Length: 452
Ligand code: HEM
Image (tube, rainbow, N blue to C red; front, side):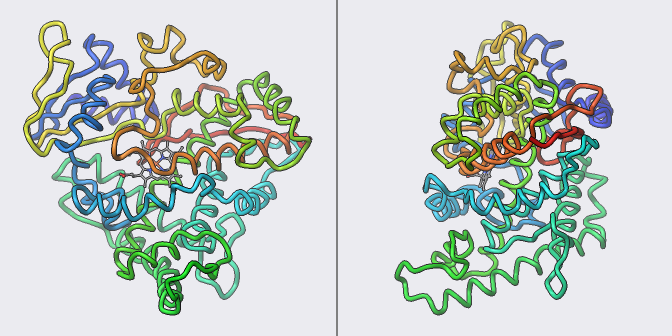
C-alpha cells in the first residue's frame, strides 16, 4: 500500500521513472519484488533478466491480461493477444513491414504542411507535443485506412468526424490507462456510459473503411494490382489475407495503438531536448544543409548521423515505453537478482508479474556512465551498447515491427522542421517532465520558432 501511495504521488508530480529509479538505488539491487494487492510482483531493470523474459524464456511469459484492459477499445490483434493467436497475427502483419520504405514520405509531407500552418513563426510560444499527436494520428490513419482523419485540419462538411474519432480514441485509451492502475475494487463498476460511447464512436468510424476494403476485395482477382487508394494501404493489404471484419478492426486498431502515440512521444521529447540545446540545433542545420533544401529521401535520412544520434539518445533518456509488463504462465526463473549478493537466479512462480523497466535501465550510471541522465547525442559517436542494455523497441520474438517506420517518420519530420526554422528556443523553464499514459511523452514542449 505504501508503494501504491508513493507511486500515485510520483505520478501526480510527473516523476514516476525518477521515483522507480530511486527505489532500485535504495535497495542496491536492480531486481526487487513486492506485493501488489494479492499478487507478488517482480520489478527489474537488469539486462540479463529482461533478455530472459523476452528471449531465452519467451514461452514462459505472456502479456499479462492486456486484452482485458485495452480490448474494449482496440479488440484482439497483434498487440493484445498471446500464443497461437499472436503468432497468427504477427505472421499476417510482419510481411507488410518487411518493405524497407513502409513509411510514405510524400504522405507525411502533406500532413506536416498542415501542422506548419498551425505553428506561429513570429516567436509566439507553442506547445509542440499535442501537435505531434495530431500529426501522427493523421499520418497513421492514412497509412492504415487509406484516408486520413485530418485532425489537424478540422472536420470537413458531409464527412464523418475525424476530430470526434481522434477525441473518442484518445479519451477511451486514457480511460484504459487509468483502469490499469486501479486496484481491483475500484474496477468493479466497469466501463462508464461515456466510455462505452467512446468505444462505439471508434468502432463505427473504423467500420466504414473496413466495409470499403471488403467491397474492393470482392472485385479483386488475386493478382497484384493497384489499390484503390493509389498507394500502400495496410487495410487493403490485410483484406487479401482475411475478410473477417472483427479481425480486420482488431488488427488495424492494434497497429494504430502501437504506432501513433509512440512516434509522437519521440518527437515531443526530442524537440524538448533540442530546444534546450541551440548548439545541437545549429549543427543539425549544418548537417541537413547538405541536402540544399531538398526533401530528404529514405536513404538520405539514414545517413544524417547527428539526426540519428538525436533520436537514439531521446529513446534512451526519455524511453517511450518505459515499463513492459509480462505474466509468468508457468514456474520459471530469472538469472539474476537473488541471493545475498543479488547475483543468483530467482524463482518466478506461475501467475507472477514481471515489470521490465527499460526506462530505468537506460538511465543506470553503472551502464551508461556518471552522466547517464544527461541528453548528449554525441555519446553515440563511439558508444556501442550491449545487445540487451538498450531496448527502446524491446527485443526477441515480440520486437517492435514498426521501428523502421517510426524512425523514418520522426527523422523526416525533424529534418523538415530544421529546414524550415532557423531557430528553436525552449519556453519551458524547468527540465523535461514525463506524461505517462500507455506510453511516456513530454508533459509539454513549449517552444518558439523562427522561420528560416
Ligand atoms: C518511437 C516509436 C516506437 C517505439 C519506441 C516502439 C516501441 C515498442 C515496444 C517497446 C514494443 C514492445 C511492447 C510490448 O511487447 O509490450 C513495441 C511493440 C510493437 N510495436 Fe512499436 N514502437 C514504436 C513505433 C511503432 C510503430 C510506428 C508501429 C507501427 C506502425 C509499431 C508497431 C508495433 C507493434 C505491432 C508491436 C507489437 C509487436 C508484437 O507484440 O508482436 N511500433 N513497440
